[in-house]
Amino acid sequence: MSLKNKKVLVTCGPTWVPIDSVRVISNLSSGQLGQTIARDFAKAGARVTLAEGPVANPLKSNSVRIRKFSYFEELSSLVRDELRKDYDICIHAAAVADFKLKRPVKTKIRSGPKTLRIDLVPTKKIIQQIKRMNPGVFLVGFKLEPGINKTNAVKITRSLFKRGMCDLVVANSLKNGKYTGLVLGPKGKIFGFARSRAQLSKSLTRTVDQNI
Picture 1: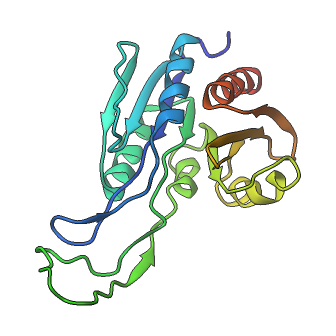
Picture 2 (picture 1 turned 60 degrees about the vertical axis):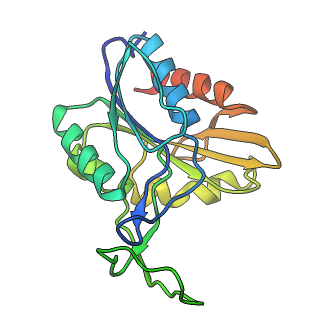
């Protein structure tokens, strides 16, 4: 297999952004898909590093190198640090925070006020930095969107190919407990369609193996 001894960086899980010294904004990502992808690539012979966010069930694996992060800035720094090591493949599956507080409070905000207003500003798009840091890396991006299907997937993922310079994009959704995932190429070709995270991971592993 062409994945034998390839260096692969996988990111997974949620990212936190601070509100104050004890509170954060997060999301509901479980990290399960990224964990499954890391295991499958390791089984295919790749040398895998998993950048894993604050998930409820951390991956336990002897074949995957694991680096932990919690906050957006930690993930951003970790990705920069790792991509200096000449990775062949980067699979950016983490659910990255899109917004952060304009001015996080350095101490704990006291309880009591009837209302609390916070001003949010966009975070930098890590996916758009990856190819700039490592132009030769094979990049897989992810787009979570409710109601994804074969008809709208090409349109929804277009910006990731253009701005993120991705080689492949996984478009997926979880609606009413039902998972749907597609693996797409930059010209709209659908390489795989899955109804579970396990199926999607296997399809992605096979597609990367055939296209790298």
